[in-house]
Image 1 (tube, rainbow, N blue to C red):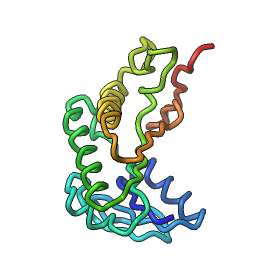
Image 2: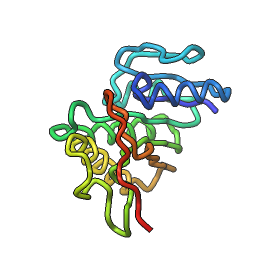
Image 3: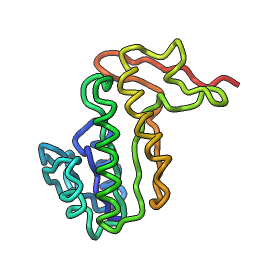
Length: 172
């Protein structure tokens, strides 16, 4: 498979790139720096918000993979993060690609019917802004009907800094 990977130099993006190369896929890595996260990829610098540029880079690929994350704590970036995801959808459409894989946030996982992890009292306060930004983006994706999109979630584990916190799991 040949795909464009947005956010390729981030924690999740670099892991996706490494796994894809190990499996023999062709990966065009896009990041602000243009740095190749792993050997064996094509790397280029671009702003994911520039849907025209991303559409150019994505043309001829089988899929777009987005490992983008809100900057900072996410709280003040919620609207901007949704706009960024709109640009990704616009670029995917303009490139003539129907498949879009998005890495979301674990906060949108259900811990009980209709109850998201992010609204639980045990959810870490320092991750709330980022989780809400990802939840807003997921709400947007649920309105997209013309693409074959999938939103996947990382494990409910925070590995930032020296912390290794297990987020609450679904009961029952």
